[in-house]
Image (cartoon, rainbow, N blue to C red; front, side, top):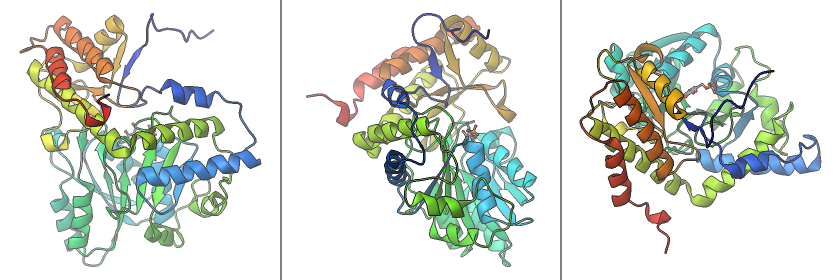
Length: 404
Ligand code: PLP
């Protein structure tokens, strides 16, 4: 029999940048009995979560909910809006941007990958001016979509999507804007309508604090119009039947009912707290984590402090120190899971997630695990990151959290 109770006493510290720790309240909501997905109660649940998700994406337009991981929603965004051989312009912010580009190529799209050179390029955000220059040169408008990642989970860099929109407008280019905020939604400021995004892709297992298994496409009227003539093959991902059935809260095929209960509960928590407070809370955790990394004297993977991700902090290990060996030691000694370096930065950095069911004390404990693990790995630290984070959190209460 597979042994699943492999964690020692106390709670495991799931500090990867998603799947994030799921609040007990959400877990309890998901433990309700599964209901008939064609019955009357389900329609009310479907309508509620669809309306809640519009608030979270900040859109007046339809949101698709798929029983799939984020990769499925990436595919859905492309196959619903594009046709074989269409050119798409993508920007290499890191590993997830590269995976989306691979997916686009496999679908038969002509993907062009802009980016800053080398491994150093993965320390920066999207360069909107490069997109603008490229679109201005595309006078025949062969590029049909610009695809970018908002919060690059592999590096901890959050890019400025409004700047990408401005670049497209400055170039007066009609391409669709497709944005992946799989790890940004409900943790980092995101505005689908205001930023003129045509399709936003997201997933359940990050800021929404759910287990993996649900993903989303938020649409614009322009994207819906494009879907009427797009010819890439699609059936499961097709928006048309989904749009029709969602009007009454139902789905063309079986939705994952219990995750929907969890989604409803998570939306109540997030919208009840207020999105702006949720964003401030994550930003503050990022600042506490960065204070720790700075005190250790280690470089942060994101080279631009204005773009530090509110969701995760990437820590670069010194030359000759294998970041994965440090992670392994921290996992084995302190029961704390950290994110691995992916793609070009494998072995060079690890990632500390600060999202989901998290608070100041759980983050301080995770930083303590990192500090002990780095020291045990022979890394000489300039000072205590744990003390720096404690000082930061003590000096910076979130206004909305101060109890009278
Ligand atoms: N895009 C980003 C930014 C991600 O962080 C992830 C997963 O971590 C994905 C896409 C892929 O999503 P999934 O693994 O749920 O298919």
